[in-house]
Length: 253
Image (cartoon, rainbow, N blue to C red; front, side):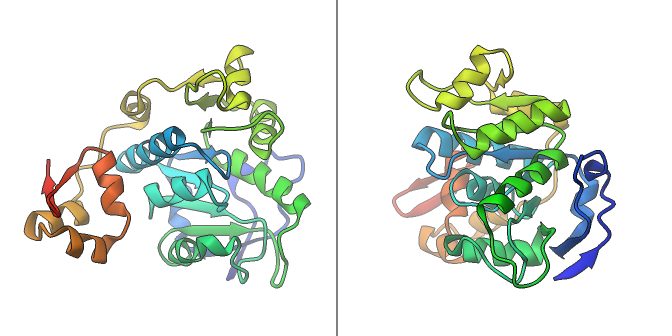
């Protein structure tokens, strides 16, 4: 947990910018194009799949995904864009919260970037989550609300985005799902993402860097070996259409 000056450009125009910031990880991620993704802690399957696909598509184009380290949409966004992701925490960085994201947060502290405005031994509170949200929204060029109830923290984040003049994007949901994002669309305050790749292409072309997982699967087609090495990322690759799992083997497409 190291201290840095709070003079991050995106925070300077806030009415209440952080006086001090603490970090763990790679500060160079702050220099990349950044997109904020927020949403419910209990997403439906449709939202999970689209969040995974979108965060991964942004990562492949060199974009850093910003979120708040919570369970649900936040965790999916971080995992699917790892290590090109920034987590802004509502507690001090010597405390891991929520515990369900322990492995993810520890990995981000080493290979991604964690930020907090709280000194040691500061637990998360209801108010600190509100303050955290302003930093999540401010750091991204745009805000994506993956799924949200009408009265939710994600909708408060959308209000902040409108206040800061940032464009809001949402996934198109059924009428009975995600009432918050549907209201944003109805009121003309958000734009729907109908094609993930077309949306991600706004930020540039796919990087041609080597892919460790695909390279491994080309040499070792056993599903068990792939899962032992890369865990659930294997299933994310299947969802993205990069691989096919057939008869306990992994086939690179």
